[in-house]
Image (tube, rainbow, N blue to C red; front, side):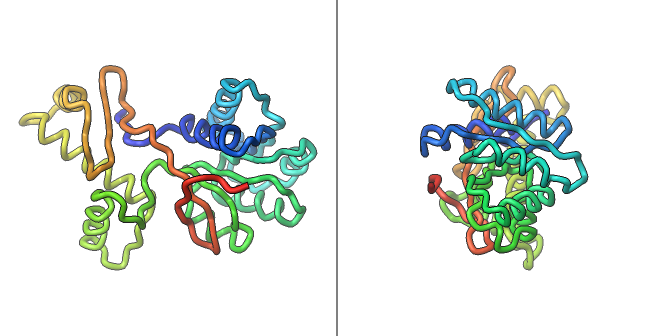
Length: 242
């Protein structure tokens, strides 16, 4: 498998780093979905904390495909967390955050990219104000690098009514990488020639977004970006606000 995006471990690492080293926040809790995805995210948070000599203050869980999160919230809140990292789907995350607002929970709330930013913002409504979400591609509505203008042009050419999204931008980057590797893989391309071209080339500049591969390294990017829900919209931010 060839990945273009940072891993969930890298996303949780970025959150913990920003909290501890940026804000001085060390009382961190986790709500996680009780499946392999959720447990992997929990492990990522624990590893990031362990590297800094900080203990997780608490962890709550919920069953997949449910929104039964209130009990987990009450348990976490008893630990007085300053921040809660949610590893789950958008609907239970939204219900968790709505209950947190109703109960006056003061902790900062974070999600990782899996949650689906637009769906989460829509489900949360006004309760979403101030919720952070990490992303693994640049902000799709931006214009900071050539990739984004090229993506916007391709998006409109395919569907004039389509709105930029993190998911479609990630797919566009994957498509651009595939085309670039195939151009170097020879005719007819094979699995072996594709992987050989990928590793031999090593670095790919996709409109200013760099992907790097090598022997034993199939993850092109480790970049993690930060966004915030503000007035119902997902917007890019550079740093956390206390």
